[in-house]
Length: 415
Image (cartoon, rainbow, N blue to C red; front, top):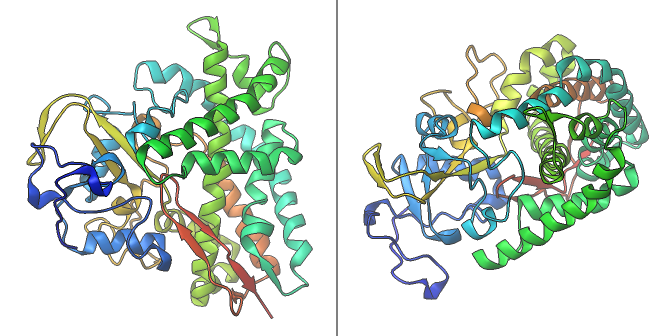
């Protein structure tokens, strides 16, 4: 990949700031990665393998930095004193609209709200719910197992984690289509310019708030163990959680529950369909599923968050200015060969699996225990019924990069 130095915004690209050296400018668009049509993870890895520096600047999406090495990416997620979560979504015009508590907060303000989410998503609560998770997975697979094929994206990935989450949150299934449309616009906002993307995201956030507001009012002061009731009746510093923060926590919970696991499952099953020897490992013994979980998580990261530079500083040989934005794609952490050799290979005997698929630092995903349990149960129920499968003839998956990457149109068939 060759450096490119745009000098004016006339072509839709940001002007290069004076503190950015020309040799660090690369035209990388996180929403339209070169080669993404052949695979999201492969597209990020191709950038990393092209010899780009550990820190580069792109004129796309308003202009921002990108970290390309694991050590920098993990530090960016962990060091809130220098890299603030005030803007976690690019471009800036969209990130400023992403005002969802506590996603855009830093410690110590962030801490109390995270504890509320942790209380709602305790490991014991999720384990108690495991039989229902298993029943949902089995029911969905049994619908199509004798048919010999399925649209995995639509019939399972987009249904299984969503049904699990809706049950945990005490929400009706008929609301799912509306919520999926909203969450997709938040994680992958439409628009051809930063301003248009900001408008799309702002509209989606408002729609999400309009959805959760009556639910919050209804569950205030009520007893119940669903996730939303537990959260909205919690306290911060001895005071009841106010409406704005209850709205933010509930919205963040919906975003995490309705988009991320869906796309992870699509990427994972697409890979296993293309690599039957890997699928055979899981089909051979349920113990292998537990052994292979962390490697699966390492191989299919889908999140790429940004951070805001808190103050002017020199960092890793680069001059940052206060307010600069820096993207830290988790794929580039997990695929750094200094951490994981042959990283695009799903190595089910890898001795040391190093990943930050759930993030790092104070914003590490509070739903990671739920995601791990969902993954294990889903694979057990799938391989119990369908030990061998492949991509359905004539069907091509579609990929989209962004804040949360997506895979769609994953069709599978079996004998």
